Length: 289
Image 1 (tube, rainbow, N blue to C red):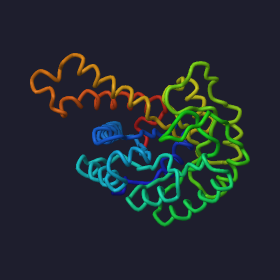
Image 2 (cartoon, rainbow, N blue to C red; image 1 turned 120 degrees about the horizontal axis):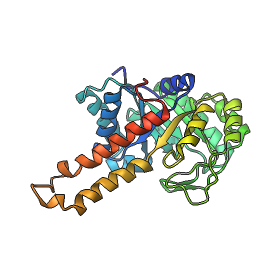
Image 3 (cartoon, rainbow, N blue to C red; image 1 turned 180 degrees about the horizontal axis):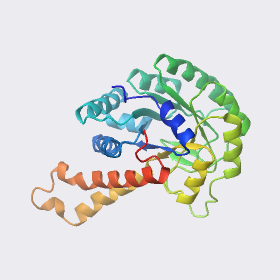
């Protein structure tokens, strides 16, 4: 499939066009299908993200890789799609994802010393070249929790960002006071001064992790300053759960075979699709591929 690609071309186009590619994390079959249908219906290039925890939950990297590729084939998806390992915590995790057909990997070495982060990122870049896959690296911890890795919302060191960029990575995730999950009361907002410095010294497409819950005007400003990829997970999880709750509370599962999972999942899938379309519009990437 020519449209099953790595993330580099998507983020490079976004950088040139001053918009951001949406990176939507998936968690099951329904999630995956919903995101692919949105990509096709809007003809938008999308990055499908899978964390180590989500891959384990879904059965493993090969299950995820085959699921995405098979759905693309059967649903006749023509929009460009990248399959990305989100927050890979080790070289081995990146290797396993690449062997399973992922087209892009993130090595998140923010829990290591910077020397270790740099060394393993270099190995990942060398390996990914063999698979024609793109590589995302992280400098500075992202706030909140992602698969057990907790960050307090640090601001990345521009010098470290440049050293990672010089390894030949394709995308850089740098902490600018962003947080995974719901944003806490008293959150000070994104650090735009640091974002400008990092964009200048790294000269790479930048990623905004923790995209759920950041005020729209801050997201828009971040995109104007070099953010080319925005990661979303929590926001879709929230609307998915809310739709299921509404269905059950209304006792729809107790009438007309409403207990059928195909019926239970219809509203949550619609909720994912509607929210994803809104976010594509917000990021400026609706209809762009």
